[in-house]
Structures are given as structure tokens and as C-alpha cells.
Image (cartoon, rainbow, N blue to C red):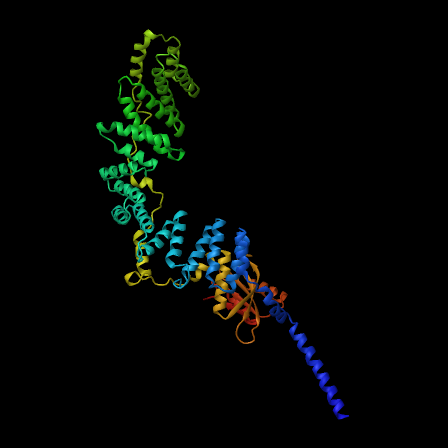
Amino acid sequence: MFIILAIILVVFCSIFFFLLLQKEETSPQKKLLEETPTIKIDNFQRGLEEYRNAKFEKAQKYFVESLKNNASHIPSYQYLAQCYKAQKLIDQEIEMYIALLEFDLGNEKGLSEHAVRYELANLCFEHNMYLEAFNHFLILLHGSDFDADVVKKCAFIYASQAKYDFAEELYQKVLNKVTGDPEAKKGLILCYLGQEKPQMMKKVLKELIKNKSSENIHSYFLGKLSTGEKEIEDKLSSFSTFLKHCDEKDGILVMDTLLSLSRIYYKDNKTLEPDELNFWIDCFENIRSKANLSKSVNLELLLQLGFLHFFKNLKGEKFDKTRAYWKLGTELDADYRKIAFWLEFLKSYQAHKYKEFSNAFKKYKVEPSHIFPNEKRLDAKDFFHIFPIDINQCETDTKQKLGLFGTQKKEKESKLDSFSNLSSQQFEIKISKLLKEKSYNFVESINTNENKTFTCIVEDKKGKKQLHYCCAYQSTSPIGELELQNLLSSAKEKSLNNIIAINFSGFSKESKDFSKNYSIKLIDSI
């Protein structure tokens, strides 16, 4: 009988403990832990799949989730950078390259610190962030390997800040290594312009034009530099080439070309040969079509074009084009007496009146100085689009980052205040990395970028491996009690009692008191 009672007691206790265990295992924390493996799908592989299908927005989300679990996964940073590049999210792409530079890339297959910094420097340069670009190019310049593109970019920025002598040295360094490099020669032209060495400038310009490596602006330069009486043909030829190939963005230079040409046109009173007539017709028509002219300048050009076409078609006495140009003038200004007079004269023109017409043309072919201002003086500063930067400070900063013999020191972790300037996704990655360093494993995101906060569930790696409800604030001011009250309510909805609040701008006194009463862990430093 005693044995039977003992068996019944054992069975009863077994059932009791079984039910107790079942209840414990179905608690919210245990249930979430059991579901965690299904949450932790390989986000990197899913990101790759979306990336290959050119679904970059979806892919980036998976790569971000991958980094929340493993903030040191370098391929995720690389693919994230490419996703941002495809979507033209420049600031986020830059963040990825900066994040990569925080790692030791020496052992990373197919990736080097030089390559990452070069991509970052070029990206900054292409998007007019010249100060940032220069800092990175300077570090690369002091590296062990010669990189012609890096040297040329540094030279360009030095020249833009009127450091022409040093820029020239760098361009010459490239030409010593890469003979005839056209980009280096183009850079030298602006250095010589800044140093006021016109003969050196002309020499390089002619070399580029001869080798068909020049740009249209170089024809303008050569025209401006051809100043002597013996160089008038060169001047006309260079300006004609420039006008033929210029576009709207060259409007200021086109107007200056007109001023330079007008000095020659109005000075020469001899009878123009057919080829000279055609030259001036082409020039003035090009100027009218490509420059934003004042009414007075436009009227003067219409008057002269009418004359030029008159002499061109004199033998056939077909003056349709002359009449058309002058009528355009009357449409601009009905009271413009010069054109009105010549239109009337044209009606009664006969061959025996040619001499009278020719003499009158010479009389009227006097430069109207009141509408043509002085020519533009060539100035190297006009051909750079870089705002002033503190070159000396950049050089000092670079020396501080570099050790002896050009060995680079590792850059320090981002300052606390820089967290507020990060993009939402980079902020999430940084917070996940910080939590891991403090012995918390990322489990699940709750919301992201909602009122500049990142909320997630993490697991404590120490002790009982409890789940914690965590909220990181991307704020520039201290967090108050109200925010913590809302955080407490949100955690209770998830049936979680362990709470972590992160804000690098600190917490108010009231919020600190509140956190003590409800055992909320506050983190305000790395």
C-alpha cells in the first residue's frame, strides 16, 4: 500500500513540475527567445539577393540588419555603400567609407585602406566637399605608393588656393613619371597663369592643341595671349575656334571674345576680302547665338552684319540678308536711326552709288566705345570653383594623423557629439555596435528613425541572458522624465521589465530620479 501511495505521489509531482515548466517556457521573454532563431535569418544573403535584382532600397535594409548583429562585417559596409551610390545618397555613402576606415583592412582580401580612402576622397571631390577631399588626398599623398591621380588632385586644390609654386612642383612630379600627361599639362597652364608666365603658358597650350588634347577654353586662352601685331592671325584663329565650339555656360567668355575681336574689326578700315567677310559674319553670328547681349550691343552687331552681307552679295545685288538683319534691328528699336537710314538707302541703291555706300560704311564703322567696356584680364582665380580652405591647417592635421616615415596612425572613434549628425541607419549600426561592446546581443528592431530614436530588443550575454527593451535617442539635448515614462509604457506593451535608455547628450535630473524608481539603465557615454 505504501509503495502504491509513493508511486502516485511521484506521478503527481512529475505532472506538477511539468506544468510549472510549461508555464515558465511560455512566458513572453522565453517565447521571444525561442522565436529568435527565426528572426535571425541571414540578412546579408537576403541583402545580396535584393542587390543582384537591383532592389537597392530593400537590399540596404537587410545589410543594415546584418550590421546590427555584427557591426564588424566589412562586406555589409561595402554593399551598403554601393546601395547608397545607386540611389545617389551621397552623405550615407560617405558614412560607409568612413566606417570602413575605422577597421584594420590590412588582412581583408581585395580591400585596402588606400583603396577605401581613395574612393572617399574622390567622392568628396566630385561633390564639391573640397576640404574633406583634400584631407584624405593629403594622407594618400604621403603614402608609400605613387598615385598620379592623387598628386594631380592635390595640385589642383593647391592651385585653387593660389599656392601656384607648390602646385607646379606636383604637376611636374607627375610629368616626370608619366611623360606628356595631358591633365598635368592642363593644370600647369593655370599655374603659369597665376605665376604670370605667359610664354610658358603659350608653350604648353600649343603642345596640347598640337597633340589634340586641348579643351575649348584653351583656344580662348591662346587668343587672349596673342597680343602682338604679328600674332593677329593667331588671335583671330584661336577666337574663331573657341566661338565655334562654345556653349551657353561660356557666356561671359564669349562676351569677352567679342570685346577682343571688336578691337581688331573696328581698327581695320581696309576693304574686306571674301574670306574676311565670311570670318566676321561667322564670328558675329556665333556671338549673337551664344551670348546674352544687351540691346545696344545687339543693335550694333545687327548693323555690322547687315553691312557685311551687303559687301558679300554686292555683285549679285541680292540684299535679302542685309535687309533681314536690319529689320531685326528695327524690331528691337524702331527709333534706331542708323538702321532706319540704311534701310531707306538700300531701297534706292544702284551700282553707281557703291562708292558713296562704301565711304559711308567706313564712316559708320567706328568702335562705339560706350557699349564695349574694357577687355577682361586673365586671372587664374576665375577658373577655379573651390571656396577658400585653410591649407595650412589641413597640412597640420595630416601630420598629426601620420607617424614617422608616413605610417598612418589609426583614426580615433567618432566623438560622442558626432552621433547626432549620423544618418538614421548608420546611427542604428553604431548603437548596435556599442551595445555589443557592453555585452548585449541585438535581437530585434522595434522601430527606426521615429522622432530620431532607435528602439530594439537586446539580450544580456551575462548572467540569466534576460531580454531588455532599449531605446537610443539621437538628440542634441538631455532626455526628460516624460520620454522615460513613454519608454516604460512601450516596454510594458512588450511585457519587458528590463529597460535601457541611451542618449549622449545626457538626461535631466528628473529623468535620472525616475530611472532609479523603475530600474531603467541610463547610458550617456561610450
